Amino acid sequence: MRWSRIAEQDCSVARALSVVGDRWTMLVLREAFMRTRRFEDFQVRTGAPRPVLAERLRTLVDNGVLERRRYSERPDRYEYRLTDKGRDLYPVVVSLLRWGDRWMTGTAEPPVELRHRACGHQMHPELACPECGEWVDPRDVDATARR
Amino acid sequence: MRWSRIAEQDCSVARALSVVGDRWTMLVLREAFMRTRRFEDFQVRTGAPRPVLAERLRTLVDNGVLERRRYSERPDRYEYRLTDKGRDLYPVVVSLLRWGDRWMTGTAEPPVELRHRACGHQMHPELACPECGEWVDPRDVDATARR
DNA sequence: CCCGTTGCGTTCGGAATCAGAACCCACTAA
DNA sequence: TTAGTGGGTTCTGATTCCGAACGCAACGGG
Image (cartoon, rainbow over all chains, first blue to last red; front, side, top):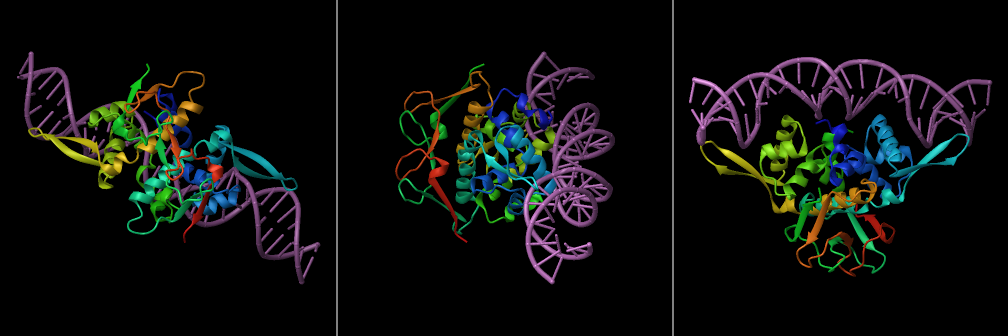
């Protein structure tokens, strides 16, 4: 199967990856959550090659994850901002961050620290079940196909 | 910058992606969480080309996400199982699933349903702050670089 | 007026990866 | 003996990547 047809799988993970599963795309989103908005800044901070970045931004806009908004006329300049659909990817990026902190930093301190304004604490977010409020362990979950 | 040097960034997201950020890798993990263990099954269920799958399994094993365990001698047969490090990627896969459910299924029912054995309910896991127990909204979080 | 700079891309190769089909090997079962 | 299974590897053409260079519109200074 070709990667470009990955969205045809009847699976939400596959369909999500058809939008955000390409190289560099997650790093673009990481930057977007760090309030990066401009092409040059995305380019320098992610390290993505310029043609690749241009293409990724285009498809994120086409898929409604970012919106391209003019912030200057003469010359026309555009910035890229997260939409609601894009902001909803926060758990994905944070989960990657958490995993990298735990398993990929060796003995060093994690490079970034999250602080929760609501409670003022340094934060290590985890998945919880909204019904019972418990932290989710994969071995407590049954996944069943509906079709 | 080359993708192969992505792990050199001082960022946990980048380092996580150096292990799980390649095409097909997340689908392999999706299957692993669905209790797939064998090469043939991974191949059919993810749709990844065989040489790509072989390479992905190898690097996941090299990175300690999967372990390769012999389940038969004569002929030698191996299966791939999640390690603790691999199981800890569950929030990433589930977050992708949730996002795909919300934004990529149109009006249809999500293809997979999660059920929490602890409480018996159908489950839609969310990120929460362990300190205060609140659900995490990206706008309530400050991310600050430590170096 | 000319020159350098900024911002945002596109164009153009060669290099790396991918994708699909075929093949290989060890064993088992009919 | 032939077919099938499990787990790969090899081969080749098609994509994709990547880095450097270029384009273009405006702006700022001398």
